[in-house]
Picture 1 (cartoon, rainbow, N blue to C red):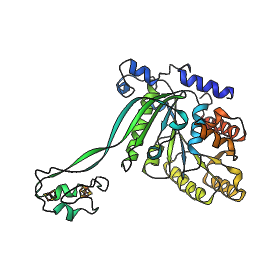
Picture 2: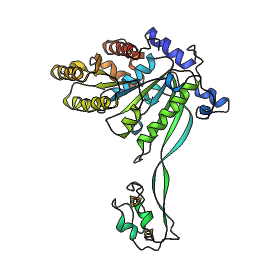
Picture 3: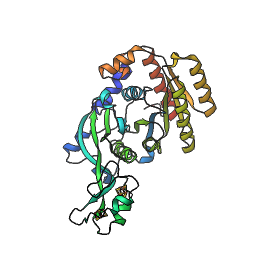
Length: 337
Ligand code: SF4
Ligand code: SF4
């Protein structure tokens, strides 16, 4: 493992980064939780935090691999895996879960069978075919509440359902907030917001200035929730027409919200024409290309080993990612992170 990575990992994992870092397990031994400390005076204010989201226009660009290497390179940070629909950062960082809580998000219709007279009015009114006089399909129900209003016997009500769970964990790379959306679960954007809220509380309480977010791919609700108020979005893309198309949509979204964008072109040497086209697009959109990471078998080997690339290899891809991290720090104007 390169010395710079070993130092960063040691500092993060031991809490010896000189800033009074606190592990989630220490909170729990003290009979508290990071969430409970939201009432205590934090060491940092929210405005003092720096937040970087690593995102992509589409899945499969190598975003999480790069996020894992950034996690190994950064010190004084809290990690937030906000890719709640397909969370997999934990497969590379192996956090130890210290606290687990069910997340109740969407509302769906529930029926009081004793009050129902089987008139079928709810079934006739529902536009989503989510209810019959016998049962409610909780996966189809949109929680619009029309059936509740329509039921002549007041047999229906909207109730929240568990749609996922979130975790506060310790890892050798620092504290980590992450989550898992149940299959078919709604409200991924709200779950992302919940993960970020806990990451912020941990960072402020533990005097850790940086939050490193592994964001969801795309431009939907959960991606937007991961990007709100970040200081920098690092967009990971690859030289294919599909990736370029989806990167443009993401850059337009970032421009709309006024979020500075940096781009990492992953597997950059696989197609020169598409690479050039992406570089031109980044220039036109005002996005800084901070690294062109070459295709490297070492990436696949690191994923298979369940480790961040930067910890197990010093080849061309690992070096490019180190450069990308240095450029990210410069863009954040916090070279000491
Ligand atoms: S509208 Fe009310 S009473 Fe009629 S079937 Fe639906 S739940 Fe039962
Ligand atoms: S809440 Fe709306 S979507 Fe759900 S069953 Fe009632 S009418 Fe259908």
